[in-house]
Amino acid sequence: MRTALRTAIATALVAGVAITAPALAAGAAFAADGPVAATPAATGAEADTKAGAEGTADAAQGTLVRTETLLNGTVARIYKVKDLHHRAELSYQGNPVGVLDATTRPVAGNDNGEFFVLFEDGRTLNWDRNYVPGARPGTYELADGTLLELARKDGRYGLQLIENGKGRGFTYLNGSRQVWLYGDAVVVLEQDGGFAAYIPGAPKQAAPKLVETPGTTPAPAPKPTPGPVVTLGDCTVQQVIPSVFGEGWEVTLTHDLEKGPKAVLKDDQGKVQGTADRAHPFDGRIGLKIEGADTLTPRVGQRTQGGDTPFRWTAFPKLPKGCEKDTATPTPAPSATTPAPAGNTGTTTDNGQTSVIPKGGVAAGAEFAAGGDSTALIAAGAGAASLAAGGLGFVVLRRRAAGTRG
Image (tube, rainbow, N blue to C red; front, side, top):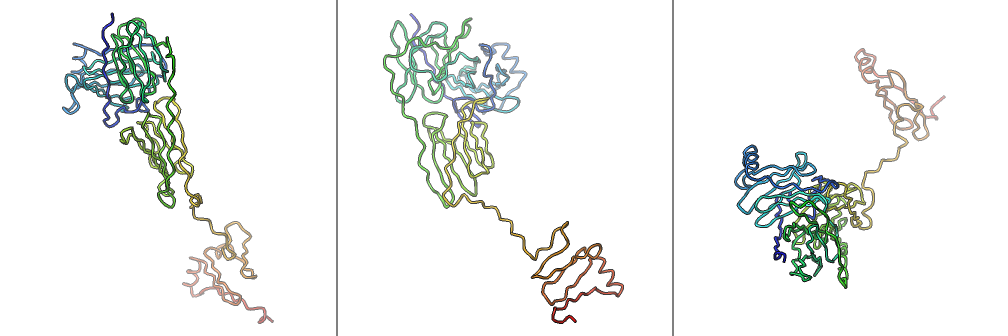
């Protein structure tokens, strides 16, 4: 007879760049592929040696116990806050990518199928694969023979241990990800029903295998739909759309002609988890991105995992009619009285009369007065000033009307 079901529900506390979505923040760069392996925590003298080398942190965040390097190079700094409270700060190539807080229960991070589990007593596990993404309801067998049944109720997935052909009772997910223990097996359940299992110390590791499907499959829950487009001003609209980060999560899209697009991601409790706008179009911590932020047709992208995971794109609501016009100042049309640019024929036309622009030293800075019977004064810049100084004065050209000519 197997031991009774033991469950430990993981709760990830948000702190700065804490892991809150169904995957580590974008940039964790966990390897998507690789050998099945696990890295246990350092214990005893080894942990004491590493802790002494690393030093300690301030009292608020606890005492640094050790530093671990995960399978793909991500560095985890493990802090002891209390006896049953440990925290892991994750960084990749010197950049922080997430925080895990294990307070009386284990917690986990997942990026592209690589898992990192932190226990409340400071132990850790890190393995790649052994994962069934988006699993469908049914009975699954783990690598050590443990049978688990996956089911969905009221929009939430849950697992129960099967012993002697009978279920021991379901425990349903409360959050985006949780860690449960079934005998020696450590199981991580995701919000989409996908789950992974690892048996510490066992030579055989494998992903959960579907061995039986239920007689009747419940109808899938209806997909959430975008809300209506609301006009907030002459050229400002807003729309709320469902998020890919989990049930109850949503993104508020605001499209403003002057300020540009803005996307705000909120969790199922209404707490803001990420923001992108024209000035900062990419929130890499959570995986929220705006493309075309300087255009009239921007779109927002969401992704729950880093690496090469593609974004899911949604267009911002269109601006009201009349706001699509180009607001740039138009270039004025050339005027007949505008002086000819350099390189032209040297001739301008004014009300049917033709004037020849002087060339050479006199041409520089020359100006002509308009009018059919007016006097045009030509001043040759610094050269004219020199002539004036010499008592020669300005050269005056008079044009007489055709009627006064001989």
